Amino acid sequence: MAGHSKWANIQHRKGRQDKLRSKLFSKLSKEITVAAKMGDPDPDNNPRLRLAVKEAKSQSVPKDVIDRAIKKSAAGEGDDYEEIRYEGYGPNGVAVIVEAMTDNRNRTASSVRSTFTKNGGNLGETGSVAFMFERKGEVGYGPDAGDADTVMMAAIEAGAEDVESSDEGHTVWCADTDLNEVSNTLEAELGESNSTKLTWRPTMTTELDLENMQKLMKLMDALEDDDDVQRVTTNFEASDEVMAQLAEE
Image 1 (tube, rainbow, N blue to C red):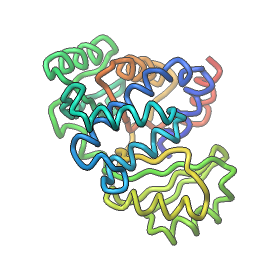
Image 2: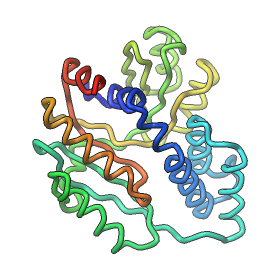
Image 3: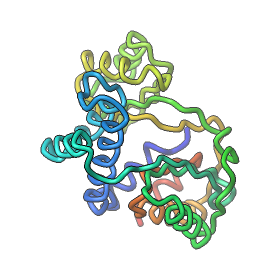
């Protein structure tokens, strides 16, 4: 499997999540504000906002921060953000998708391009790597949600397409348009999820050795440090041995 769940685990062990917590809250608040501005400020009547609020809660964003973001949009306050997707290549040709929200397209484009260049990557044209991914809904659960069979049965009943299970937990995949319904059905059966979001799932992967994984980590860290960048997705594949070595650094 592409090691994305392992990647998240390594970031957690390295303390990366703690370092990024304030940035994470800001990015999630921005998503809530944009979702509320684009539709009804009531999550019950706005599927995108409902998913944004659900994801924020799963990341322990305080309720008052969530409420403030929604009220800001309802009052017509805050900047108007444009959603932009950048595509490029990292070490050994690994595909990278960068999703951004910005109030200054030129600033963000320049920053993302510079980050790729400084970290051994190349920014490509729109569509240059997207064909290697599918847009999917992703619901994440920890190992305490149940064994693989329990989660698989719940996922099938919820209308999901696939489940990946490991010692670290379970990832349930579904059609992007079904995410809200699938996540709600799963939570009724398995409890609250650790994560609920729209994401890019690789359909083909690129194998990386330790040296190239280290380079990719630097590139991803630099991109994620950009305030305009919401999410970074890659199609890397790495052996258990390589991931274990990274975790020890």
